[in-house]
Every structure is written in structure tokens, then in C-alpha cells.
Image 1 (cartoon, rainbow, N blue to C red):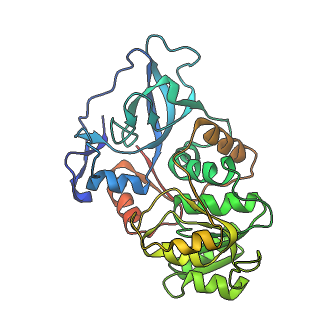
Image 2 (spheres, rainbow, N blue to C red; image 1 turned 45 degrees about the vertical axis):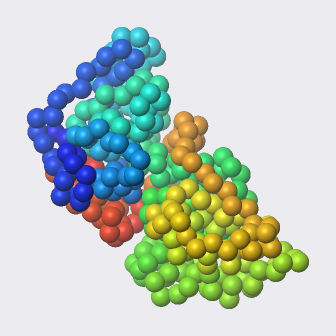
Image 3 (cartoon, rainbow, N blue to C red; image 1 turned 180 degrees about the vertical axis):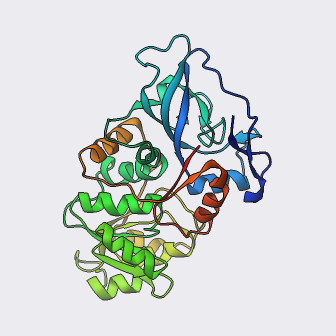
Length: 334
């Protein structure tokens, strides 16, 4: 079968579309799905490059997020039928992440443990479902499960044009917040406004922290005046210290990653002086993915998909993710 295979760590040139990858078999407790859509995340870039402390069993088919139809059912699997439309939770309880510790979604077929399957509602497309887990699932857990955003909050989202970012913008608006979306180009800013962002900031041209202080006032230590209520910061790096300066007393900083650096310059004085809440959020669960598909089914959420590509162009799609030239998700249809 056709598959996008990583044979050794390094650059994206190490990805290869092959036509003779072994067909998976539905052994006990597993099914095989015909993958109809799989989406990229920045995590896939890290997988290709290699991550300290994580030994990926190479060669591996990359791709965490996928949706498709069941084509084969193994022994001991109940409650599922051939032809069922399913979203796959990328976390395999025994081995780890799909597309990293075992073959993932960038292939025509994939072997999946039955406990990873989630039935798709009828009006949710494969492309929409495959866009959800890592990006939208993470955003939903961070904002909704942890109950961190309420109506009327001023929520500033860094990296707002990516998968997690667009998810945060739309979910924060769904919760009734005033959303400030930060992006790196005029085109992305315009598209974020169209998604519902109340304000947009070009972080390449303007310090987002100084912009927030000029707009909402300087945070005060003795009152709750000034600043924003929430900053979503999964970039880290040189965005961390400015984040501390623009959050109001008692406000929240939400963290689910560190794409620009995990060991930033810190200033603990802001955290105690302004009683800031730094709230971590890791991954997502089945309830997040079900809730998101229900929102799509009910026309309350529209997934942002920048490109839909054939498997032969998948590596070019991941390059777009690496270069941060996309708005939302890149989906591949193997």
C-alpha cells in the first residue's frame, strides 16, 4: 500500500512516499481502517527531526490524526462493524502516539486498537474529524475542560493562526470572550478577523504585550484593573516574559506547549505580585473529541482547513507547517 514513511531522523527530505508498505492486519483487539483523511501537526515536525529522550522505532508511518472507515475487524472486538465511519484517538494506551511509536495515518490503511475508535456523527466529514485531535482537542481541554475562560473575558491568543490557535480563537468566542488574536502577517490577521477575532495584532511589527497594555491599561497590583484576563501561550521562548507583563491581577496564562523554546527567561515577581495563575494542559481525551464533533454536527464550530493534499504532496504540506505559512490545518487524503 502507499504510505508516507520516515526512515531516519533529520530534515523533511527523509520522508518518502512508498507504494509497497506492508498492509496492516486486524489482530485481536484491533481493526484496520481505510484512512480517508489525516492531518499534520507541528508535533510531526518534531518527530521527523527527532526528540531527545524519545526513541522512535524507525521506519514509521507518520501522522497522529486520522479518520476513516473500518475495513476489517479482529477477534475480540465488539460493537463495531465494517463500514463504520470513525475518528481515531491518536493515543494508543499500550504503546504511545500513533505516527510516532507505531504506524500512523499517512497511509492508505492503518491498524488501530478498538479502544481508540470514536464514531463520527453523520454530518461531520473525514477532513473535519481528522483535523480535531491534537489541535482542537488540546484547545478544548485547555479552555473548556479546565474552565479557564468565561463570557466577557479578554483572551489574547499567541500563535493564533495555527491549528491549536484557530481552535482557541473559535472556542473562546463560543464561550463569549473578547478575543485578541496574534499572527505574523496581514493576510492571517484578516482571516482571523473573519473567524471572529475582535482584535488582531501583528507580532512581527508590534510588541503584543505593549499593545495589550496600551489598549486595556497597565495591570495593577492592588486592584483588578488593567491587562487581559487570559493569555494562551504555547510558544514559550521570547514570548514568555512579555506575557507575564500584560495579564491582569489574578489572570491566567494557559500553556500546552513550547514551540519556540521550553526554557524561557522568567521573572517570578510578576507571578506572585499579580497573583497570576499558570495553568498547564496536556493532551486531550475522548470526551473532548466527542464534544468537538457535536459542535461541528450542530453547526456551532467550523474547522479551519488551509490545504487538502494527496499523499504524494504530503511532505510539502508538512513543510508549510514547519515554515508557519498555513492558516489552520493541512489535511492529507491518502
